[in-house]
Length: 325
Image 1 (cartoon, rainbow, N blue to C red):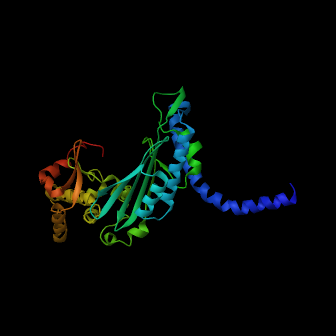
Image 2 (image 1 turned 90 degrees about the vertical axis):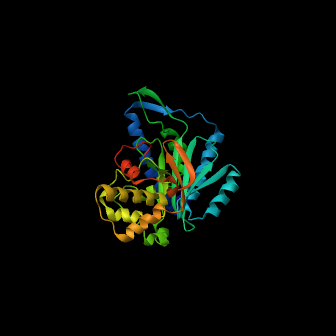
Image 3 (image 1 turned 30 degrees about the horizontal axis):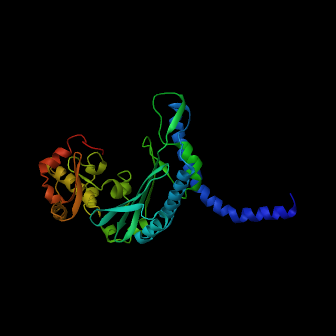
């Protein structure tokens, strides 16, 4: 190599290495997640290939989606900036559905799907601040088993993700075992700590796994027939239940209220007067929620509209779940 070429090579390494290093942080992590899927898949299929048969246009559309997801994950933006980006890049092929959670709102973002990537995007706002973001990715294509080893394999297309998606992603993904998708959850604790809710409700409780994701993502529909606190350590931790009564997600507060009603009536637990007052406020609140009875979902009702008796509440904690909790 000529001296001039050596100088140019060193210069390019000096300039590009920080960029590559930052990007490779995500690539290395994300490839390890794909390795996990690969290992699991090969327990059932010794050799496989992608069933992907999409056009170049579909691949380019997925790249366009990933560009938005990079922006969504990386940038500390408000809703107006997100909607502006979407309108500039996807015209009218997108929508945002907002669900009231009490003091907070959960927003489900939908973009018209034209590629191989399937995606669910959500974010939660508290006091006009985006404090939680969630990305879930899957593939329309599947794994085509060439040499079967059993009767079932993962249907998340490792080959497609590795070739077309992972090199472009500027956010970390986590594989959920047998969930046939990868996810990214981000909670902005620095923003949460500046909200009024942080004075009453702890966002750093470790006693229940994924409490932050549960607060903002899973508990957006009140289940009439079942309580999601039934099978957690919360029933053994009354201080935690007291804390949950102040959740900015009103459905979490309702679940805590019902857990305390159960403990009071079945375990003969004494409840402090101030907590009783808070429980009554939750029971009689005018906050409208989305509720589910069996397979029927209803919107725009308050908890008091449902007229849930203490006997119904006690029954919830004594029977097996009736839906997907």
